[in-house]
Length: 400
Ligand SMILES: *Cc1c(COP(=O)(O)O)cnc(C)c1O
Image (tube, rainbow, N blue to C red):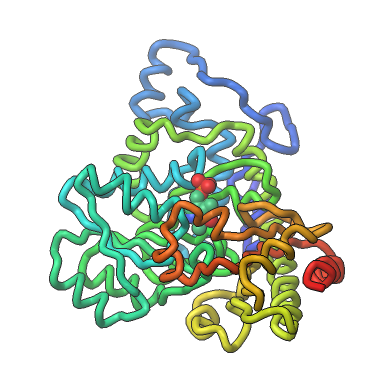
């Protein structure tokens, strides 16, 4: 049957990557099978050599992986007419491992910025250096300084960006930095977890890779851990990236991929609601007498408001705020919540509220934490899609 063109973002969310099931099931069933069978030795040979498209072993590929991968690749490339290939992983950290190990060897350096997800920061600071891969951390909002450092050190091979960053929401300029990476022939990679392809498309600025923890907004319901690496160099994705992912054994599994596929279908609808609710919550907190400051990219006084407005469709679902009375007030606020949930992670339908100093960034030394603006009294909110009145009422009573 002729496939209608998918012209809108939500149509791609719902339909891209789907193939008609041989039994006519509406949804692609969960292929709970570790291996696949052949009609003949010859067919086996053709599948192994790649001459015949088909499945062999679920550490390598599965119909459930492929559906989610094609959806994500179509969304990251939406409107860009850029063919992309995605590789699904067991977690964001799994996808990140494939990115670093398939692109870097001993003697190579990475250039990155201070505010990064805790696990990424730890991987760059602790896991990679003993293997001979060092990272130079600088303030990448300073473009001149960034260029100076890249120019002076030919062993820098990769630029690694996260914008907006977890949990500080600091942004870096994708257009300028990806341009710099291209000029100096660096591989560039962007963690797009906080923005999702609905709000921000790093490939539009020429990046080589986009990385996601699919655990967050792409899945959207908090039902599975997952990660994805998306690349525009198809040969690289089919070759070294695919090989490394197989060797690391960081593959996804059919059930989690199935959940991810269903979650992505509502990405646009959820993000619109998430962002609308977040703006309301930020506005409410901004005027509250118990709150010292609010950190939300949608507020015009945010230092990165201009960068975010340039490269993001809306300001996102994440915000943080500081209570006037610091640590004790923070703990008291968290303990009094009645509907919003006390949990780390983010990007679910439910509003999740956490305290980075004692949770996500506990392993980062205090002086480094403060350098990243993660103070002891900081509260982070992943604003959910509940009716906004209930979110506001819960926060109001917890602050009272
Ligand atoms: C959660 C997260 C990761 C790590 O992903 P996992 O799925 O937990 O392995 C990486 N980057 C960002 C921005 C995240 O929020």
